[in-house]
Amino acid sequence: MHRRSIADSSNQNLTIDIGPLLDVVFILLIFFIVSAVFVRETGIEVDRPAAVSQTDTQQQAVLIALSAEGEIWHGGMQIGMAGVTPMLKQQQRKGRHVVIIQADKHSLTEPLVQLIDLCKLAGFSQVSVATKSGN
Image (cartoon, rainbow, N blue to C red; front, top):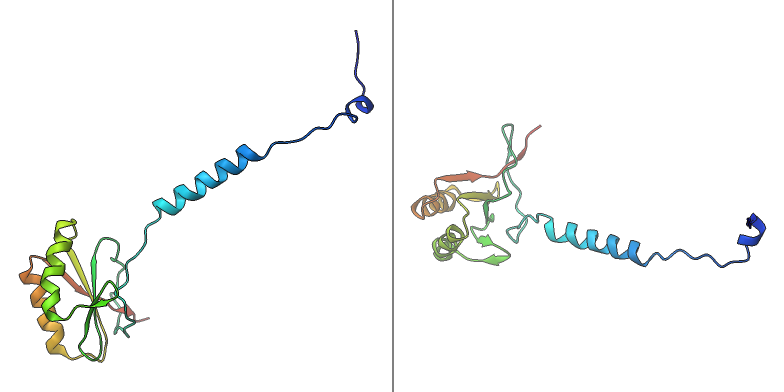
């Protein structure tokens, strides 16, 4: 019987192939990037009013922003009052049925009420006004 000693094995070049390990890591990275949920923003930053009863419901909602100047934004574009109904019809075809309006706390009430009316007339029964936590 021939036995090998530890000294004999040190003469051999042993290498570890990390190629398959890198392949698995990159596949996992791509999987997590593709499956991540991205929240769509309205395109402008508004200073929302505070409320104690605030909840987070932005996952499958249509986000519309109303600026202090009365401008209406969606998806980074200014759409105006005339663009609200066509945009909402398109969002309904995508299966979205909730609208969240992010109104600036310095915006006038009349454009906000008009925007809520347009959302309800477009067939959206759940229309909310976003607030920030009032703690």
